[in-house]
Every structure is written in C-alpha cells, then in structure tokens.
Length: 150
Figure 1 (cartoon, rainbow, N blue to C red):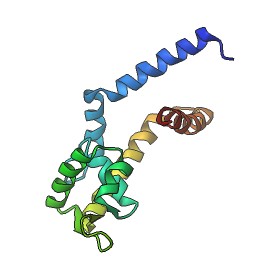
Figure 2: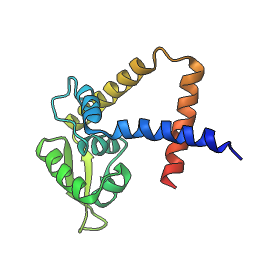
Figure 3: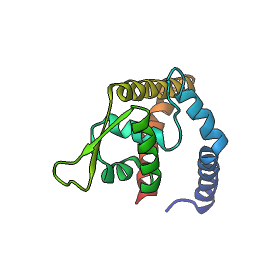
C-alpha cells in the first residue's frame, strides 16, 4: 500500500498540473502554435474533429464520441468545417438518417500540418528531458488517462 503522505503529495502535484492544462489561456497558447501556417482557425472543438477524421471517415453520430466532444459542440463545429471546405458530408448509405464525414483534400492538408505543429511543440518541450524521462512520460501518461477514463 502506498504511503498516504506521498500519495497525497503526488495527487496535489498532478491535480495542479492538470488544472493548469485545462485553463483557457494555456490552451489558447497551444492552439495558437497548432495554427501556425494553417489557414483555418484551430479551436477546442475543431482540433479533435479534424485529427479524428484524419484517421478515417466517420458517421456524424460516432465522430463526437471518438473525438471526445459533446454532440452539440460536434454538430456546430462540423457545420463550420463543412463550410470551410475542410470536411465533406454525405448521406450514410447504410442509415440515411446519418451522415458520413471525411476530410476534403484541404482538410487533409490542414490536419497534417496541425499534427506536424503538435509534434514540433512536443519535441521542443521534451528536447531537454533525458531519454528515460521521455520514456517514462510516454509510458505513464496513457496509463493515467486510462485510469481517469475508467
């Protein structure tokens, strides 16, 4: 069983860091970096949708869940992405009540650039970390996220 004092200190440190990540001003700096040389605005709602669609077409009903956004937000953002010619929307042949969404060529380019910008941001942030610290982060962060999602 872990030492309760040590666990409490760890919880406080992690909570403080996660709280900072959730602050709008912190996220806005990240999104500003993600938008570098991308000719479309990248906001909290559009980023997860574009990145999710980069892995393949999705029904509109499934996209919100896969992207981790609520359906109302997804619906509004999808409309803006379609209007910006980043996402193609067509009727689902299997269920005509749904639509299937996919990235347009312009959307593919934007999603690729956003991903490259995210990689650059992380490479810069982790450049001074030791290989063992980088490996620990890569191993432990998914574990934390999975535990929080359970």
